Structures are given as C-alpha cells and as structure tokens.
Amino acid sequence: MFFMDMETFEETMVEAKVVEDVEKWIDEGMEVNLVYFKGDVIEVVVPQTMTYTIAETEPGVKGNTAQGVTKPAVLSCGATVTVPGYLAEGEAIRVDTSKGEFLGRDN
Image 1 (cartoon, rainbow, N blue to C red):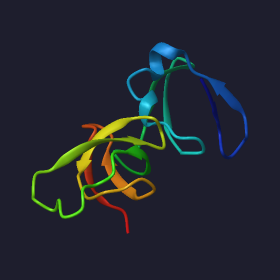
Image 2 (cartoon, rainbow, N blue to C red):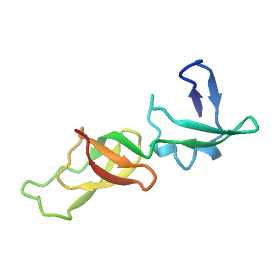
Image 3 (cartoon, rainbow, N blue to C red):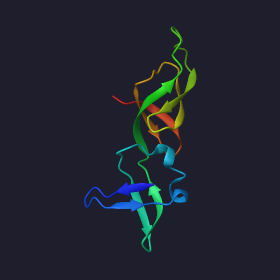
Image 4 (spheres, helix red, strand yellow):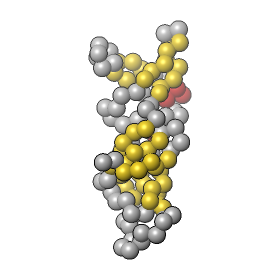
C-alpha cells in the first residue's frame, strides 16, 4: 500500500503486514501517521475517532425504535460495524477505530 506525504508529495510504500491491522479503517484521501524506525515504516496510525458514511445496511423497520435494536453496516472504508437499527445507508457516523464501535451520528 502506498501513502503520500501531503507536504512533499513523496510516496511511501508500506508492507502489507504493517498495514493489516488498520487497513479496514483507511479510506481514500484520509490522513494517517506513519511511525518510522531506522528508516522503515513500522506502524500506520489512523485517528481514533473517524467519520464514515454507511455504504450498505439493512433498511430499518418502520416503528422499530426500541432501544437495543442493532444491525451490521458496511462503511465507506469497507469495515463493518454494528449500528442502531434506525440508521440508513448514506448517513455519516462517528466510529472508534481502535475498538471498531459506533459512537454516534456525525452532525
């Protein structure tokens, strides 16, 4: 996977094994931090809280506003998280990327 330095526009290649833990949270154009050791990237750090768009989820059932009703949702980055049943495709939500948990709607 390649990452671009936003100041110098240099591209840095990062090995798949370094990115694998956070790859599902990386979205096109997002800013991440690369941690270097002796000239090699050893870690890719994504922001702990990010906003993503729900790309795919089951439609909510009308009148289904009971607390605790959840469903899986595929986000714009490709990751899947559990969201409340009232959310629909196209809505922007905040996600804790370290835990993979829904935090709330993004206003």
